[in-house]
Image (cartoon, rainbow, N blue to C red; front, side, top):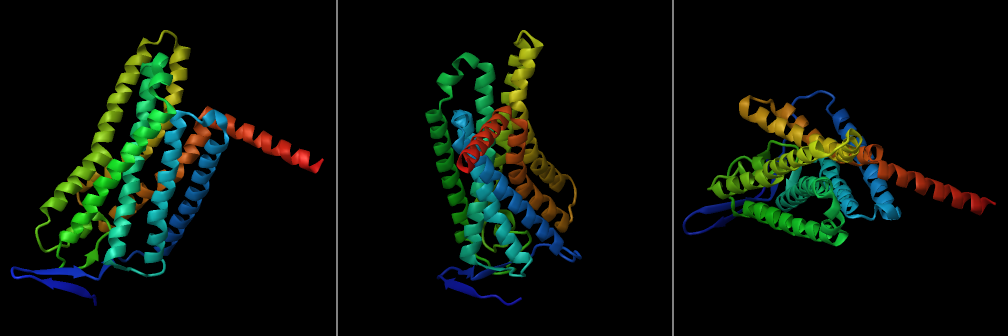
Length: 326
């Protein structure tokens, strides 16, 4: 496999920075192009569904609340995360452009991980919203204001950008003097730094830090949040009130399950048994693309506030059309 490398020679060692990486992807799967077409359809639905939910939240005044600031942010990260991953994936494999420049690889890695991290932290923020709404209902509108929620999201965005920027920038410290074949479906952080031939212990540490931030800490906090919510629900006097309060959490719980369970399953399976590279790539690609498509659909169909807003907007638009025609 031919590739170009820029070589920086110091008095102590030779530092090799490649011009390109080669993204390996799937191996020996017949008709795999149909899978990439499927991902293209997933991306099209993701764009339409997230654009729709963002438009509804923007136009419906009753959705201009702290909770829907976070839902809007989740839709933005879903849309941008899929845009950072799927079009490039299709170009890479469907059109057989598997060579990617060093700079483009790091850029792709940065954007994919930024939006993935913000998806996770947005779900955690929604759990905080439900926690305050059910455990401290009388103080909810004092604690959870639009301004407070915007400030929380700004802090999370700045934290995420700093964390991922530092993690990706550490790749530039690595020398790649051997294979340049990334055994994944995009410029994945782990498979990329594993190719280096100098000390990558700091990269390994940051990989674990990112895993804790994206997966472990949010899951633990969400579980603790719902434990507190469950205790609060038990103390509610009537079953009707309990059911009404629980229904406000249903959509969020479904989103949490869709996002985290496949990721947790993939990581546990990778630790306890051998997973064929093709199976791992399919699992990871679906895990990183399907939640972004399903999130807005679930919020539209499962949330009464959103459905009411859609009905009102529909009646308003049809009323205007009838007025224009008459």
